Amino acid sequence: MGSETRKEIISWIVVITAAVLSALFINGYIIVHANVPTGSMLDTIPLESRVVGLKLTYLFSEPQRYDVVVFPFPDHEEELFVKRIIGLPGETITIADGKVYVNDDPEPLRDDFIREPSRYTGGPFVVPEGHYFMMGDNRNDSRDSREWVNKYVSREKIIGKLYFSYYPQIKWIE
Image (cartoon, rainbow, N blue to C red; front, side, top):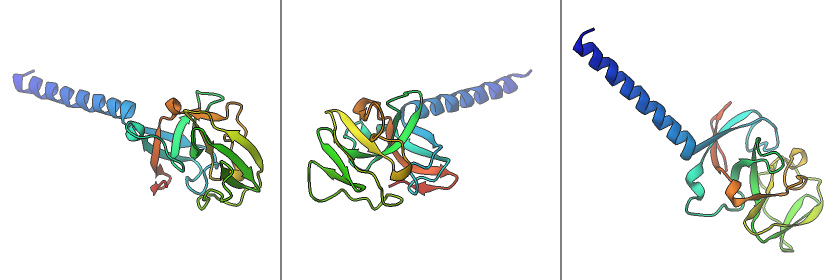
């Protein structure tokens, strides 16, 4: 094998190694991708969607109400869940006839993203400091903070904010 061939092989090894290391770094520290196997986030996220978000979103800011985030399921942390943040740290959430109220405000939260009117009534849910109350957009068919044993998601457990789905269709998540 000639000197030129060896140089060519080494250059290919260097390029492939750099590409693999870059992909591992990006997947480990910058982006998060997840599968949404259920219809709990319909119509925002279609059934069986694959979604992408950024882990860096909350590096310099706090999660906001209505953000769609990915996190380990509080009752079984090996499983990733995707839900919308509804209750913020220190708030009291009450749900009456499917409408969500915060801190006894007579005006319910906006719900223009939900699939259909909810039938649920419950609460009050007092969100501890450093934690969030999560709900799916398909409120009538979502396992979320309303029924979990560990009802709240701690700030440290939020992996990232989701921005778009790439399968089965490309769609921005709002």
